Amino acid sequence: MLAHTAQTESSKHAGYGARARPVMAPHPLEDSFDLMGAPMPFARNMEIYGENEPADYFYKVLSGTVRTYKVLSDGRRQIGAFYLPGDVFGIENGPEHAFSAEAISNAKVLLIKRSAVTALASRDNTAAHQLLGLTARELGRAQNHIMLLIKTAQERVAGFLLEMAERGQAPGEIDLPMSRQDIADYLGLTIETISRTLTHLENCAAISLPTSRRIVLRDPAALRQLNG
Image 1 (cartoon, rainbow, N blue to C red):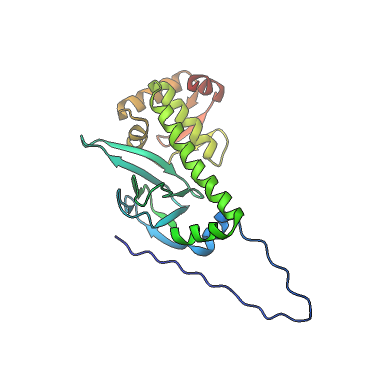
Image 2: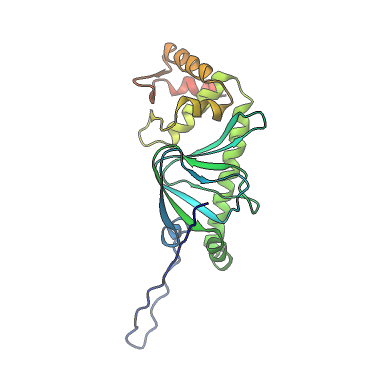
């Protein structure tokens, strides 16, 4: 297990005159991550943390993409979530990680000591509210994933494409950082079903596939209708 360290220092400025220096408003929690955290590079497919390891850190993706996953008893892999630049992950409701996490591509990840975040939240109401918001976001992500897994193959793929388009930079276009095997393991489908469904959506003019990783949403309304 890699040793992770993060340290912060406060700058002190001498005051002049009789008036007290105004107290600066606290940084938003996610901005404070940048001050409290230590960046660390991870190579493609490198483990960031393992299932059942102590959840001593929160993580923020600075570049690249991260997946969380669990290996099932029969050897199959279930991907829990994909995290893109700006996303925070590793937020757990217990002392250990429920999933493993690894870099999909070369990535840079900010490591923030969990105890530092909880200490900040304990003395700052704004930070506490934002930590609650991050936790609720993770819960919502998990709930949406569960709902996705009970749908048909077409509905799952359509929902995934809409999700990735919403999280992307260019409206209506998706540059997928993950492989089709990753997508299959996220949606609980086979890679053959993923490929067949994408081809069907292309034939229906709902999407176009300039490359295997680049997808253009030609008819988002049709995808939304499929997604229910």
